[in-house]
Image (cartoon, rainbow, N blue to C red; front, side, top):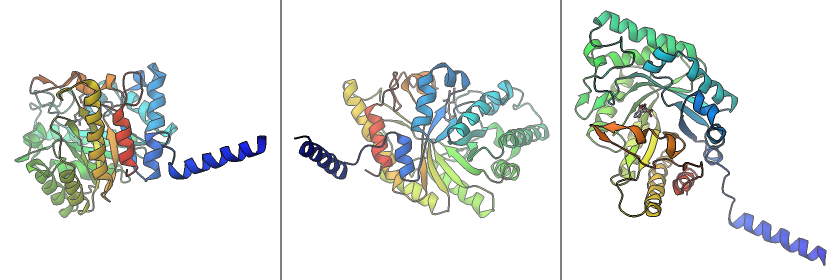
Length: 351
Ligand code: XIL
């Protein structure tokens, strides 16, 4: 009696395995099965150690980390390297790659366009400003040398008309971008160097300017290896996947790597109930990532956080308008995967 029953059970299990492959146990497993990176922006050490679920999810689900703030010039100037070192150590302990973010950034989020520390400002004479920028790159890139897979060297330097009129452009002239890439490369020749921006996902006026910028850099022999598309999107008016794919394709045709560097999908403005909004969010995550993974130059996607609770969207303002509160990420407040998680996973798997 026992023997036939055992045989039947085994057969059924085998049949099930061949018809429905088991779902990967994590985004990381899914991405690694396709040779892709899947990343998250990471908060600093207090968050890493305060809630075991945070640190546990970070290394289980992701193979790539971008420090959300700890490597920006302002925080480095104020806190020193300690908090960023903790993230880099965590990554090494869990066999994860790190994207350094972001060496040169005149935040669109700060009204006075400060690039970082308050002492580096418009009032500084140009030679001292240049010296400060060079010291900053040498010291930060030098500190992390050998531990950083890729740097966002310059972040958000372009608008639809050309180079944004930032304090860097005003003080250093338009060559500042090439100078920053050259100095970063000289300081850590093994790191891949990226230009990163928002609103440049689709083929549009702004992404045309980015294309011209990076092509111009390559033509001049400047060391640049990739472009990051931030992908902070609103599910009620999100970029077209085919247009994103075309943009990735033209950048890859220049020999550049492309990654989605800061993805989140806001759902607050969608009509309907929460369950419906979460379904739309799943679709948006799926369609955008799916269009990109089909492009050979695409190396992977980073989400701008893990759980909705910590998302920057909840506190962010653009043009004095609050962006949140919202639920833009893959995990809910209890670290449970949302429908969006499965949308992203299927896209990574090419489904
Ligand atoms: C955001 C962080 O998430 C916030 O915590 C911080 O207060 C402001 O910066 N584009 C970028 C990121 O390149 O560095 C920004 O991160 C989000 C927009």
